[in-house]
Length: 157
Image (cartoon, rainbow, N blue to C red; front, side, top):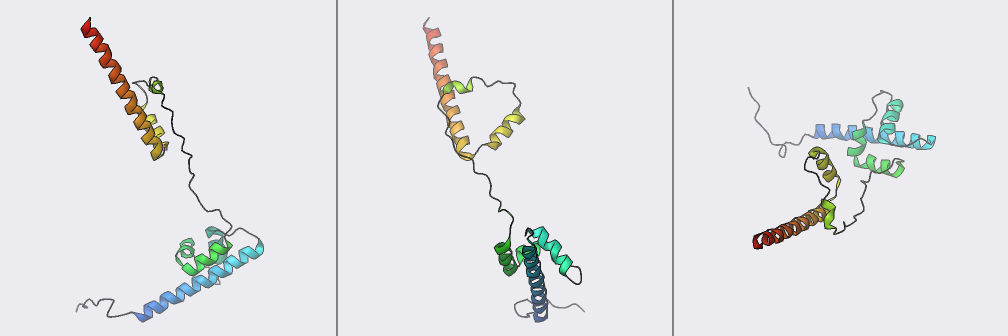
């Protein structure tokens, strides 16, 4: 006979929550011991070293995983207090506006490597791309004006 679906809201599984709490506390205790041991030994405190040290300290030899440190809020806060690793910060490029020299686009060849050009444009920031696009439009407008002027002069002759 099939079991009927019982919504989790009506049937709270207290034994399951107790199991989760037990594992969370175990992870917290092992993590704190590993972090404290590493800081007392003067070694660097990183996710990997804490995970490895917890395996050494744990009587079962299981230890804790690196993601457990990230997901357990209390353990993660303790980790951040003692962490010796650098925080990753993406490099910020300084924005340098390009000059309005219209002759800058005369060197562009038609048979250039398009993949390389695409790579170069992907390296630029959004403001740099906008500036380059405006400059190119200005160049095209200037070239169209020059061409129209020359065609008009040809027509008058």
